[in-house]
Image (cartoon, rainbow, N blue to C red):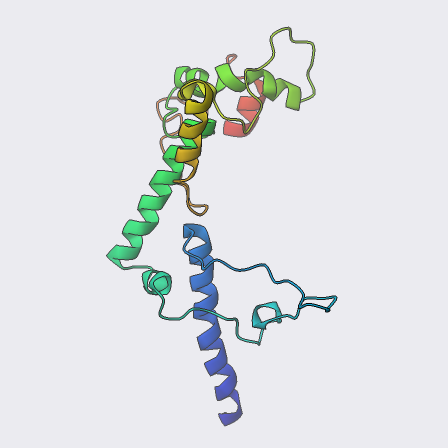
Length: 198
């Protein structure tokens, strides 16, 4: 039994660093990593511990402010930071890109206003359907310009809002089409909508 203790201790030490690092990646609390460059005269980068396979402990900034925040994922401080950043990211993505599903879309009319009028033709182009005379206002993933001022002022507004997005967290859209019975069959469903949302 004694020969297993060092291995168990090593796993106990490594697993929290991996879990904390993944949480920090999602919340943009990860320490900035410098891209390794070869030393002068060397052809290859000299790897550090983070290049090594499982079993070699990674370099981790134990005790830093970012580490203390994620040390207890059930603490009020962590949950407030986690939920607050998810709310901010969702709001920014919603205004800039009009993604669906989104909680602002609770009816089919909301869907038409929030998404369809901007991206409808882009959907058909992606499905390989062509020949429409009126192209979509925007391609998927592009900024919805109507949400911002025109010209350089609008560009500044978009950049300012993009700078508030940290990490990859967003809120789950639990209210999407909540006022519609999307399970019932209807002629007003198009093929794409029926396939994706039912």
